[in-house]
Image (cartoon, rainbow, N blue to C red; front, top):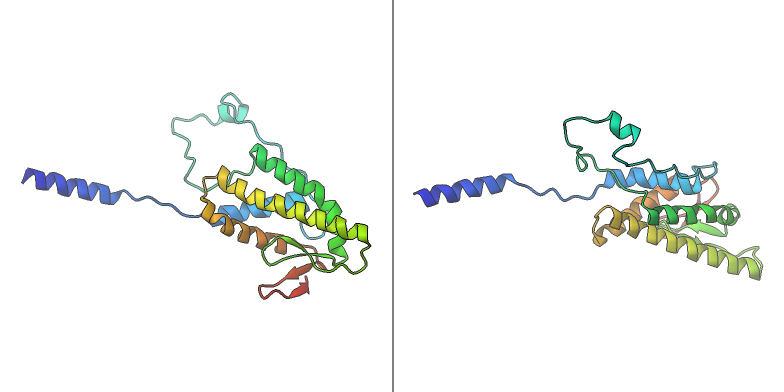
Length: 194
């Protein structure tokens, strides 16, 4: 009887413990909007420089002012880490390249594909040198974007299987914050001006 009671008690206690593994879509969406605005600017505005990382020192004024007798809850509200050195370097690379890409987007040569990556939409009006330049810019940009998504997943403990979800969320943000007149590819592969 005692064994049975212990077994049932153990069963009920273990049944109360749940592991909540989920994809933090809302937090990734906020991070995507922030990163796109920092690197490319919103519709019709220039890119903004990335904010300086705040000190996480135990003796920083903000830390000292917030001393309490309760432990800091780090996993309660999903907050995506977008400020490690690798992510900052990728954001800076994307931001610094955006001014070279935007004239080609304004002319319609480069567009935002349905997966959120850039694509050469048309070579009309481009000489041989400009064609090579657009290809180089698009390839570098797409490589950085893919690396950014992987680094965000890595920095936040998100499994590699969820990188396509991150990419999809960023794709919506790239399109939503695109300038009016830029070319966007719809889900069927057709190009239209925003």
